[in-house]
Image 1: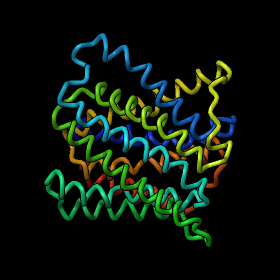
Image 2 (image 1 turned 120 degrees about the horizontal axis):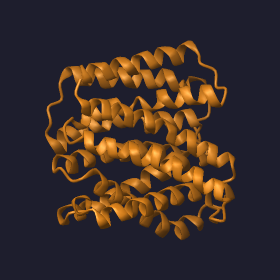
Image 3 (image 1 turned 30 degrees about the horizontal axis):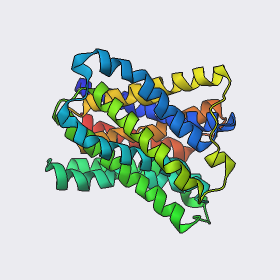
Length: 293
């Protein structure tokens, strides 16, 4: 097992904290847009000195053409993670559609990157998707919510796949992970800020659209720790790892995220751990083993 595989595993585990942390901040009174813009702003401000004063970490000219794509993809991912649920789609269905990501990665990997997709990798993808299905257990849902919400969640899965593919593209060019993450942060922030007045005309929910950053200092401290431990550190490991491992392998390994998220919910939010969750976790770990062995 290469060290890059371990990096991707840790990136997936850290990603499990993202939705969990966002739920905690939401319970503390922050709106969806406050969380999205706040996290992108903190990451941008925090990484700026590194790309300014460390010459080898600056964004090379060749990387600049990818920044609008990273920004748009980051906006879609952020918006779909929270927007679908606010449009009436049950959380389990929304998460399941987001985690169709490996299916799209296989297609885009073959079409855009021309990387070899073996039968074993396809089996690994199917295994982890079945694991996610059991882990999330959407079978009890009778109402799938609004069609726009379902489409938005599915678009989130496609956007996640494009993020993995784009990460592999710039990774193969050996651009520094700090430069990539800074470009992703500042471009996503731009799309979120520009979109706010447009979205506000159509969405009239304070829990979604409220925008005031007069938080207590302790909230800013927790939000900063959350951003750099989960988002930034995980992304840096991802961008470093995809320099060596394929996009399909990355897509499979990253699906360890719902497993870590479920464990966090069980420990801190008293979510029960059923036998289906246990079986789903085993299948996810099995799929991961198939791509890293």
